[in-house]
Structures are given as structure tokens and as C-alpha cells.
View 1 (tube, rainbow, N blue to C red):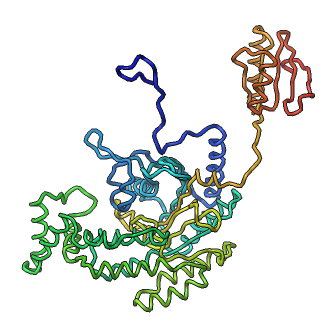
View 2: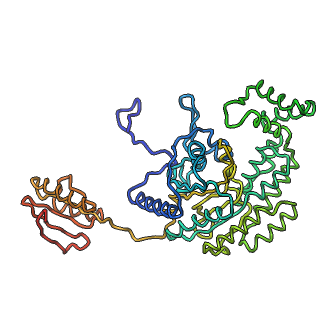
View 3: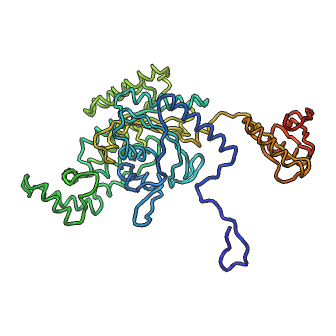
Length: 492
């Protein structure tokens, strides 16, 4: 509450921020039950729970998150440091691995649960603060690791009574195609982002975006000018020339996670590439083709094999998909109920292999789970060695909302009320005795009458009311069976 300056002193109510949500006791209890059930399933598969800071350096999420996720971040500058509320857990868990877990034996199975923040348009099932429950499998690169992730994600939903619809894909198909074209990173990022929008049948305006992608920004133009000078520099002097140019224009090459040599090599590669209109259009046509392919694995796999032959791409992603499906059959899943969607992109730039999402039902309306493989992220964040990894997250609130309808459960709570002020000490002692036995007990702290306490306890859904008398006797009234009343003595 506050007083508006210049007002007559009338206090105005402060409202919660748009996109944020209050959680009442019933909803909180339901979500906590879901959280516990999901973490228990993960624990049974060997996952140990960790926690990471709510606030991280902004740079942690800039390196591989993707433009759309970066635009959603709550990032700000505080005391000369750029910091952000975490928009997801995976980068934080990998940062934790780089900080303190690199000496641990692999694989590492880690789980977590906590809030994340994204500045998105609020709508049904989406708020700007929500809870992720998830896990990461670090140090395993085989198809069994991918299969374990998908099985565990489905297993957690099944334990809650939700029949999830699994959609899977492999980002390697589009990465293989893009690697064969001289595209700038910003063009590659836009194409992968567009693939996900096309898959979800959202509009992508190629004509509006292509001019910016081809011409680039000021820095890209600078790289173009530098690239034009490459042919004039002797090969044995090239790295020194680039390093000198970077230092001249004020780009820091010391103190980061990469050596100056690695930075120079990246710049040379960037200068040697360009994004002309024909390459962007060719890539866009390919992702359009990918985005239109979806269906049961038995139908889609042959179509994908024809596509890779037509474009002279590698078969490895399709082989991986088939192997993972075979392993999921071993876990007891009917893979014919799954949907194979090679246009799945998930909007994050750190994915390198298998991807999957799980929806509530077959309509693909409410996404409950998302995950995939990200073998390059650890080294991007400074790990000494490459680390194959995969993981997924549940959306806790969406899962709680998707649970099958259940009858409202009434709390097994006892209300103890003294019949007179002199009985309060006896009532306190009785309440403490029952709590020691594991019961939930409320004590009347308002001095209501017996009828007032009865109305309050019934309205709150309590199971019984105990009225304590000054002589140490008390009567118990079972509120779900009001006719049942017993008289007893305190301490018996």
C-alpha cells in the first residue's frame, strides 16, 4: 500500500506485475505434489538433485540461447555487472559443471526444480515466472542416453496419470544442410528460428527479413571489408594481421574462455563466409520442406531417407532416430503412437542432435516437456574437454493444470478450542501432543464460541473439532459425521 503524492491521503492498492501469478494454498499443494512425484521418478533412475542461483551473469545465456530467448530475458546492469534472472536451467547446470564438477566420474545424472523468468506475452498456460522440473545427463553420447531421456519424461507423466504425446526430431539434418552453405551465423540462427515457426504453421516473412540477413549489420559489413583484404595478406602473416586489426578496433582477446588464437580463427572463418540472397533462399526452401514432414515414424523415415539422398546429406541423423526408437520399444513404449517431426527446432542454438517435446493429448496444444541433445554447450561455457550431454524440463504449472479432474480432497485437520480462557493452557498441551503424533492441528486464536468454531472448521474442510473445558475434560466432534461426539479427559 502507498499514498499517491498530492492525494488526500487515500491509500491505493498495489497490483502484482503483469504476467506474474499468485498461488493459493490448494494450487500450491497440488503443484508441490507434482514436483515431488516427478523428482521421485528421476531419483529412481539415479538422478541427484542440485540447485543453482536464480541470478546469473547475463553472458551465460547470451552464448548459445538464440535471439528469441535473449529478447525474453530479464537482464539488467547492477553495480557495474550485467546480470539476469535465469530464463532456463540447462546453461546454469552446465556452468555449475564447469565450475566444480569436471573431476566427477561420468556420466553425471543431475535433477533440479525451481523458477525461471521469461518476458513473454501472458496467455493461458503461460506466465512470465514459471517452474521448471528437469534433469541433465552429462557425459553420455550414445542413443541409449537419448532414449533414457524420452522414456524418463514419459514415465513421469504416466505416473501422474497423463498420457503424453511424444514428438521427436533431429536437428542434425538442418545443420548438415546449412554447413554446406557460406552463411553468416545470424542467417543460420534466423533459419533455425524460422523452421520452428513454420513447423507450428506460423507466418514467416522471408521478403521482409532477407534484405537485413544479406546486407548484415555494421559489424558484419566490417567483416566483409576485412574479408576483401584477405587475398592481399600472405598466408603466414594472416593470423597476426587479424589479431592486430581486432586490437586496433578495441575487441578484447584476453581473459575470456577462448584463447586469442581461437578468436582469430573464428574471425577468419567468419570473414571467409558471406550470405547472399540465393543461399538464404535455398536454405529457406529446405527448411520449408522439412517443416512440412511429420507423422508416424514408419511413414516419415522412408520420406526422410529419400530427402537426404536428394540433397546428398548424411544418413547419420536418421540412423540415430531409428536406433533410439528401437531402444524406446525396449522400454515398453509403442513407438507407432509417436510423431516424427524433422522440422523440430526448439528455438535454442545449443542443440546438436535428437530433440523432443511432449504434449497433453494428441492435439499438440499444450506443451508439457521439451528437451534434447547439446554436445557443444559445456565447452562453449569453458569446460576443459568436450562433454556429450542431453536433458529435458517439465513445465510444472502446465502439468498440474493438465492433471485428470479429481474430487476435492478435504484436509485431515483438527481444530482445538478452549471452552473458556482458563482452558487455554490445557488446549495448548493437547495440541502439542497431537502434533507430536504427526497430526495437523490448529489452535483457536480468536476466542470464538463453540458454534463459531464449528462453522469455521466446516468451512475450512477440517475433519474434527475438539472443545477443551477448564476441568481438563474435552469433547470431540467429527465434522464429517456431526452426530458422532465423544467426551474424554485431556491427557488420556
